Amino acid sequence: MSAPAGRLPDFVIAGAPKAGTTALHAALATHPALYLSPVKEPKFYLTDGRPPPRSGQRGPGDAHSAQEWVWRRSDYLALFAAAPAAAVAGESTPFYLYDRDAQARLAADLPGVKVVAIVRDPVDRAYSNWVHLRADGLEPEPDFLTAVRAEERRIADGWAPFWHYRGLGRYGEQLRSLYRHLPRRQVLLLRYRELVDSPRATLDRVSVFLGVEPGLAHAVPPENVKPHVADTRRHRGLARVARAGAALGAHLPPQVWRQVSRPLLAALHAGRVPRPKMPVEVRREVLGPLLEDVSLLEELTGESFADWRGDTGRGDFRSRSGARPV
Image (cartoon, rainbow, N blue to C red; front, side):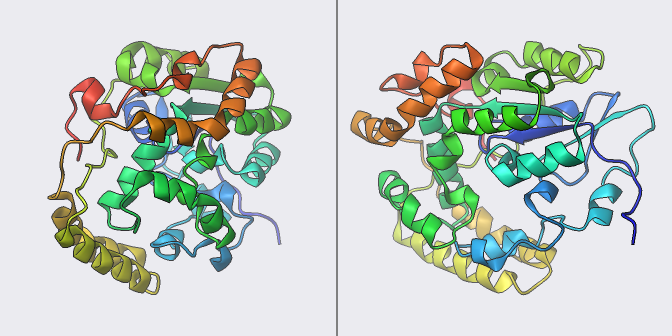
């Protein structure tokens, strides 16, 4: 039986998670010559044409999230059916940069695809990742460093990639792998700080890379910035409900739990407090195993990432841009 015909994307925003991919997707969607898939993070190339295996969905909320993956080719093609014939079409799945099999599938299916990858200080990225999962009640560990130390055990136990706090920040290894599949001219590497500090120039740079007129895309407020929540008895109780609900939600249509969980998430997020400054010793321990990869990234790109080696990061989106997280 022949594969269904239809349009595939011309470009993907491939990563990294918690590095501004949601903001970039929304901004590019404002460009009249671009078409962004209505479903962000379809995750199609993370699959091999079958549903994601349960063996990789053993962390809190993983099985529920996996229900939303677009793994059927016909469903993936349908995401771009409404794209105007002359539009440059794209989608955003941050885990494509991390998943080596996804890179291979993407390059084999779309040898001319353009890839936009955003990298962020790997400790800041990991911390934002942990804050995100804590805010939604899924991360059971109230201490960031303890959660990072649990990463290898969690990976062995089959927790999904979003729990790979250090691993997702090994950009040098990821980029080296991607360059084995695609020529460098088809890959645009951005830094998170560029998107936050100079959004207009960065959007113009992406537009030129994608072959559309610069100056027409505009930045939009971030939608994926989660609040830091305090470790209180109230939060712990709500989080237990959230994890239990997400487990039950794995057996229901994904939109059902999303709808039901909205008041719960609002209650969880109501416990927001100012994000505390990370202790130097914590940053050093998280960063230590990543320093060799930072050097590899510099070797691959010819750019300096010396600021990542320091004892202080560049903070979260809110503190640097004045944006209010939602």
